[in-house]
Length: 85
Length: 470
Image (cartoon, rainbow over all chains, first blue to last red; front, side):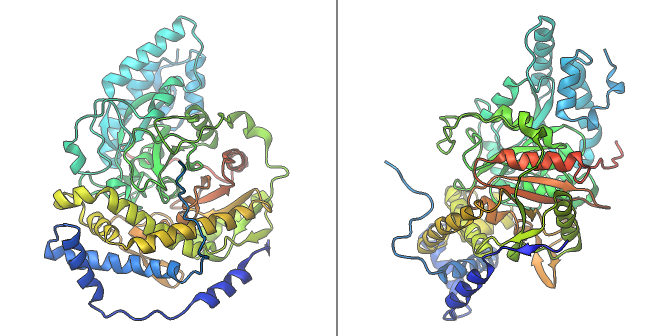
C-alpha cells in the first residue's frame, strides 16, 4: 500500500541546506595532537598503542559534533537537562 | 500436580507459568528445578548467565508454595523465574556491569528496586546475565565473559548491551529478563533475538541500585516472549522511587487490563526520511506490520540524523565522565574498544556537548508536536538481522558501516528524548528482526496495545529457536 507523506521533510531539508556551511579543514594531525595534550591535561595514562584508537574515536565524535554545530539555535535556547532549585 | 516434564517451561510465557502456579497445577520448587536444569543444559552454548542464584531461588520457591498452601492471595507473577542484566544490584553479588574492573567491588548489599518489585509480585530471581562492558555496546560481545550467543544462530550476535537478557529469554531459559536501554540496549537485542522489549518513558521505571552509563539516557525495562508478559512485568515494576532522582512521581497506570481494547481509533504512521529502511529484511518487517495495522501514511521525524549525532556525543561525554577515575587507574582492564571510546568521550569539549543538549530540547519540542497528529510511529529497531560474531562492518544500502556503533542508528533518536518504545519481533527465516512502536511520553499503554494486537493477529511473534542441549 502506498503511504501518503504528512512530513515536515521539506522544511527540514531547507533548514539543512541553509545551515550546511563548509567547515574549516583541520590539519590531519590536529586531533592526534589534541589527544596527546588532553591526555596530559586530564592525567589520563596513554599507552602509545592506544593513540590511534582514541584519535579515531575523537575524530568520529567531532564529526558528529560538527553536525550539531551547524544547527542554528537561538541565544536563549535552554539545554535539555534543566536544574531546578 | 503436573510433572515438570509435562509442562514445557522452556517456551511458556510468564503469564502461563503464573496461571499454572495459581491454579495449583505446578509447584514453585518444580519450576525452579526445571529452570536450573535448563540453564545447565543450554547455557554452555548460549553463555547468557554470569551468575545463578540457586539457593535464593529455592528458598523463595518454598516460601511461595507455603503461602499458596495457606490460601494467601497469589501475586500476578507468582512462580515466574526471571534474571537480570548484571548491572542490576543483586544482594550478595558484585555488580559487574559487564566489566573486569567491577569484579573487585564488594558484593551489593541490597537488590535493585525493580528486582524487589518483581519479587513482591511473586517472581523468582534465578541469576545475573551477561552484557556488553559498561553497557557501551550494541553487539553483545564481551571480552571478559565471552559473547552471549544468539539462540537462533549461535555464530551470531545476540545484540547489546542487554545481550544475556535477550539470549536467556530467546533461548527458553527464562520467560522474563530485565535489561537497560541507554541508546537502544533493550530494543537492539530484542530485534536480533526475536523478542518483545519495552523501553519505557525516561523516568517511568526506577533505575535505583543499577550501575549507570549515561545518566540522562539510562532506562530500564523488560524483555519477554509475549506482549502480555511485557505488560504484566511493567505493571509490577511501575511506581515512584525516591532512590532514583529521575523516577517520576506518577500514579501507577496499569496496562494489562487495557491490552484487549484493540487498536480502533489509534492513528499510526511509519517513520520516513532518516528511518526509511534500506535492507530487505527491515523493509519486509515494516511493511508487514504497517499493512496489518492498516497504516497508510508516513511521517517525518525532523532532524533525526542530527538527533542521533547529538545522542552519540552526549553519551560519549557522560560515559567518559563517569569512568574518568577508572580510566586513570585501570585503563588496561577495560576492553580496548570500550576504553578508546570512553577516553575520546572524556576529551570532548564541553562547548560541543552543551550545544548538543540545547539541540536536544529543540528536537524534543519538534518531535512532541507529531503526537498531535498520530498516536504511534513505526520504525525499524535495527538496520539488519543479527550480524556474525566478530563481524566489523555491514552494508546499509550502498554504505558500509561499522557494526558496533551503528546497530542502534534507529533507536538512538528515540531514547535521546526519552520516548517510550516497544520492540516487536517479526518472524523471518533464518533470522528475526524487530520493529519499534514509538509513542508519546507516558503512553506505554498505546505501544503495548498495538504490540498485543499484532501478536494476536500472528504478525509478530517470538519464534522458538532450535537448540541442541549439552
